[in-house]
Each structure stands twice: as C-alpha cells, then as structure tokens.
Amino acid sequence: MDLKSRIEAVLFVTGKAVDLKEIAKILEVDEQEVEEAMLSLIVDYSSRDGALEIDDENGYIIQVKDEYMDIVEKLCPVDISNAVLKTLTVIALKEPIRQAELKELRGASAYEHVQELVDKGLINRKKDKNGRSYNLKTTPKFAEYFKIKGNSDILSKLETKKLSELLELNK
Image (tube, rainbow, N blue to C red; front, side, top):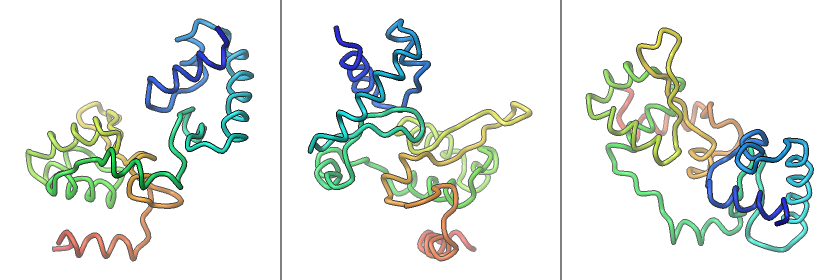
C-alpha cells in the first residue's frame, strides 16, 4: 500500500486536523516519511482541479475548497438552536472566557450548550490553571462556518457591537 494513500485515508476518516506525529503513530511509520509523503500529497491535491484540498494551518485536514462550500452547506448544515447560538456568541465576544463566568451569564443550560459546541467543533474547552473550571475559545471551524476572515479570536468592534445589539447582550 502506498504511504500517500494511507495518509489520505487517515485524513478522510478522522475528519479533524491531525499532526504528523499522530499520523505517524496511527500508521506506525517514521514521522520523516510521513512528512515527505504529506508534502507530495499536498502537491497532488493542489495540482488537480478538484473540490478538495489539504489544509495545514492547525495540523492536516482534507476539506472542501471555499468555492464549493455553498454545496456543502445545502447538504450538511450545522444545526444550532437560538439558545446555543447565543451561548456561542457570548463565547466569541468574550473569548477566552471561563465556563464558570459563562454559566453566570447564560444560566445552567450553558453546560449543555458548551458540550454541544465542543461536539460540533465550534469551540475548544481546556482546564484552566487551577483546574476548577474550563477556558472556552472558538475554533478555526467557527471562523470558517461563520465566514470570519483573519484572526477568529478577535471580532472587530463593529461586528461586536452589532452582535451585542442583535442578541441584547449589552444590557
């Protein structure tokens, strides 16, 4: 079996960004071999006129090119309820935010919302320094889904004001 094909299978099945070390461990191959094959695979994908590409911003992932996202959104929309969307908006506006602070702002249901958002890959949750709460932050998938260009950690003041007014968060 060709190493590039095996790497492609890993990227396809995982559906999330994976680094070279993870791929090497899964395939039980030297990391240097994986890196060389990955570079060749990236060149293969970029040279053909297809709908897929390999992105390497936060690890490696096979994804649909931007110009085909309208098709994907019709077939696979991310379903988010209004309540969960409001929780996500608070996280985006105040990131990084402690889960305990989010609970104060959004109520006890915020715990369920956070789990749903983590499952959908829209936020990351990491234990804070004292281990008593979590720090919440949006992911590149959040920025991609909501078509936010540039740094997903910082929304412009205008976007922040519009979102706050829309969701009545500046009371």
